[in-house]
Length: 299
Image (cartoon, one colour):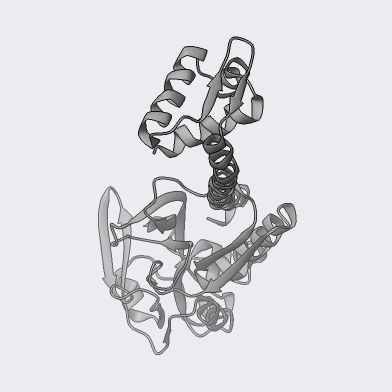
């Protein structure tokens, strides 16, 4: 017995008419009648007595209608429940974001999103590691840089520019480096958020990629700690612009090497591969992207 034929039988029984039921389900009356006849043939019993004026359920038909109505309702409920995962704006989104973005930009954006969608809860973890989204039950991650996990969908959000800077105090004491080689004579503080390349600062100059191997007495994987060290005059840092944007505007940090173009890295929304992205996740990604664009000056 075909489950869809059972559903059609329930519609006919409820409407008491092939014509009315056919209009309800979008079939022609002959096509619907043929489906019910096929159902009777498969079951080996007659379900409906047909006359020119009306139809009546047989005893077998009455029994099937009672059971079929319950099954049809359960199927409808099951479909509605599953559809809610795709289209529903409720439940929890678990996400992982970098410490810089989480503290400076995303906290306010996520709070605003939750205010707009009060039935959605967002559990936001701040961490810089490339975590296993599937293994840790995460729905979304925001990450910057080269992405190696091809099993994830990467949706670009914005490009992040970096900046070399130091405090006016350090500049007064040690002078300003005029080129990359001059950086070797300075105390350069390393941002070790990445697995490799933390001590190799890369730039573009006159159409070519340039790099310099720096050295210094302080390294950390926390951008805010590095920023505070720079503000205190301990050395030169090379960090994402968003981390020090307000300091640059206020003059508490000074941008260096204006003739050298700093690195630019893509910022991505990452989520496990799926053919059907849940609506609440799509809305959150769009909201984050719009929030980044509104604060494009930070990048």
